[in-house]
Length: 372
Image (cartoon, rainbow, N blue to C red):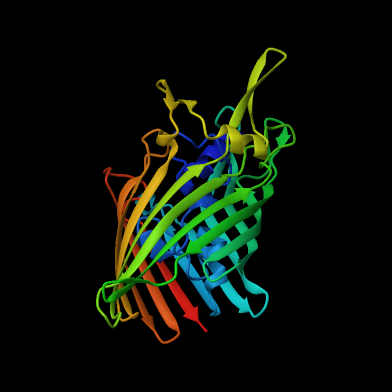
């Protein structure tokens, strides 16, 4: 029953751990891309990370920021289900001279109202499910070209209440650590125009697994390795028109391992360091119909994005995101737009899924920004 609740949370979150990977990790809501700008660019942000949402994409990107900024993102989640699910993300960052840039965030996913049943399917009542995380991040500028970053968050997952099969069901909790770096070149003169290349890497959500009952196995956090690049170039001598091309490649770095004890076979989360080593190799996955082997390349999730900006005021964005069919199977085109005026900003993104009737179809994110 507890494992089914975890699968429910993973399905409702609809992150990169689709039907093929939901059994690997707990709290997959930590992988929902929070800001509308990057979401409109095919979920690319690890090498851009130039606002407070760098906390998610790459906390090292905080180091190059000098402004204080706050942003909130809201999305009605899985609108095709009409289940009153929603996702909210509040984030802020402030620069402190001589110290670096510090940011904080709160993430909340409402999973709606569920029905509690016993082993026979008899209804025992109803309850609300939700997950949240809150944490702090820090970016330090090593040089004009290199920055390092880290982050720490507390994670709380309330999927059910009461007891199941004589076991008390408790909310699960854990803590996660991020380690990140970003490199950017000096401004590049390309003819009579200016460009800049950036690259970033972020290993996020490193920490102990989540457990919902006293004797249930722990499921690992969705530890994610994300790396990518971005290139921004002025299209005219005055820099009124600019174009940014970005690519992110990400991979889940968590694994369960098979354990045989007293003739019984179970699965439990690998220790973090062991999983970071083992996750580079292929592994078998039971799809429910057959067992398939996912190679290293099959495990990669790839996004590409493009952003056109006019006079630092108005932006148009588009992108494409793809996963292997047994590694999440998300394939969609993204569209987005942004508007900046004085200290205010608004970003919008929209998902157009390749597969018909996909749960993420027509997902809209709206972010409101305040730069001080």
